[in-house]
Length: 241
Image (cartoon, rainbow, N blue to C red; front, side, top):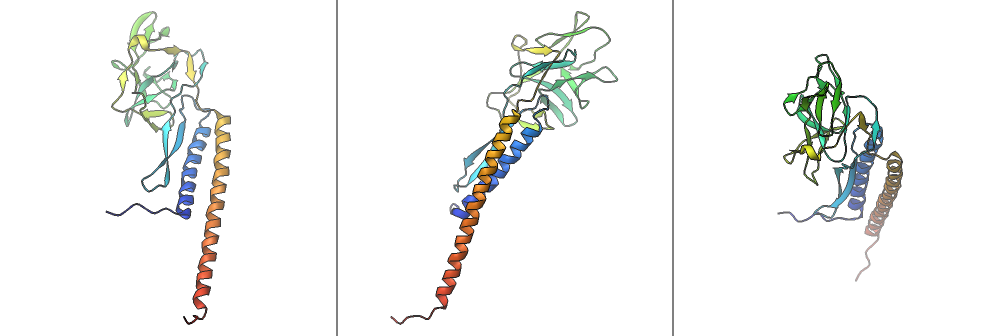
């Protein structure tokens, strides 16, 4: 079994550059989605691998965004933890972006046309006054029609982003009891990304990247000088012992 990779100044500096490039890409994506409703930013963090080189991992920040009132009866937000469920061509997905509407068949759908799932499947809403209570129960002209599926995942779950504001559910998903739900009708959740903080972090990473580049260049130049000196010494006449 091969032993651990021996690190040196060059490999450590190169590893730092790769780590910072990944962190900058994550921050850039967060900043690009600072105005995307229901978007959850990602956090980049470093870990030391077995060979003592740094690597960058990411995790989704599930901190709730602020709620904005829209007065649209099909705009919904989950206060606190929890997700709505939509059915996509790739399977069910969890979403926080509750900007819903009715399609030509009067089914409740998201902005991409995916059906919003209720406890008994897709939800069809006839004409009439629509009210949605905190438990996600849909009332048509004051009478119960359907109930939205609202789910949560276990604390510490690292959800996989998909399509910007969707998440791939994992085995820890579970329905939230009706008395613990806080669905808000006529509201939408904003992105949880702070644009100013993201820009500040990007500048910090840029400065660190430039410093790592300078270190790598200095080491490379020093090694070049050392190699040149070794070759020069090798050409000198040997002094008899």
